[in-house]
View 1 (cartoon, rainbow, N blue to C red):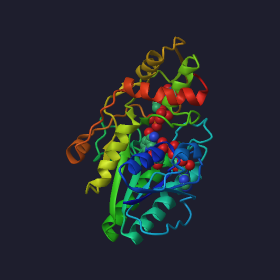
View 2: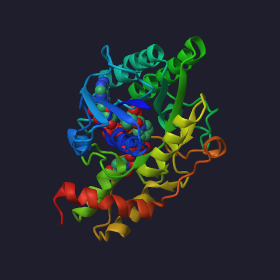
View 3: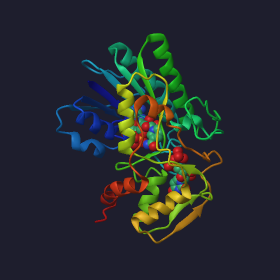
Length: 318
Ligand code: NAD
Ligand code: UDP
């Protein structure tokens, strides 16, 4: 296939480029580097099956030649209010990437009769009242809450995707991605894993926001990409959760990072990030298991060991 990936210079987009090129496809990357980096795709510069366009996908986009599939991953994704690349500080760009960017990408899929895959998120469930979250749960989101620019943009993107599927017969897929980690996560974007790995590798105490009892479940990037590619190759049009169901408190997560890195500086408790920080999050992956025959294979400790060399290199630690 000839596949367009928006957000190609980001964490997940760049891994998707690698895996789809390895599967023999031709890949066209697009990105405006608002939160991503050319470093993430520098290794593809001489790959003749890879080409790159610097574009803001919220504006009209044109792709020359045929297109068989378009994967829309372009969006700020970090919920950290302190980070320049977090969506709190890029609210309009975030809403435009989810709304106008999704519209433009669906337009490309329609005109080329191509498959379209939307990178949606567990955030569409908001601060969930049911646990674990299965795809039929409609979510608990405040449209004017502090996370709304991201959550509602993704919810709109899902609605638009289903509208193009139902009214224009576009061959669409929706993946609801849960917390994912691995090499190429931006060390400065403030998400839990890069923040804490950086602190651990520098021998500093790990910052836990609130009392650390809020839960998440972390998926290693190779597992996630494997699930997304299986979804792309499937015929499933309804949303599918992809994530690791191994739920743990953020405190347990921090303790695991200290253990794997050998950091003895312990933990510092800080104010909770916001009242809207979801308290519990774990994917129900029954649909992914049944429809895609997919489940994650990499344990947290193994995933951390695979990630640490990248973060050490970025920090200039031998
Ligand atoms: P990232 O910030 O590393 O990557 C996003 C990329 O999109 C960046 O390279 C950025 O420059 C680019 N981008 C943003 N707006 C753009 C625009 N208007 N035009 C062109 N490029 C633009 O984040 P990520 O973690 O790789 O997330 C990728 C996608 O996956 C996002 O859509 C995000 O919502 C979704 N997602 C990620 C996670 C996760 O745990 N990483 C979880 C749920 C959903
Ligand atoms: N968190 C933390 N310390 C940090 C960064 C994050 O305790 O240095 C917490 C954060 O409050 C949230 C969880 O870790 O409860 C996961 O945060 P992340 O930014 O990775 O993404 P989220 O799951 O909130 O979208």
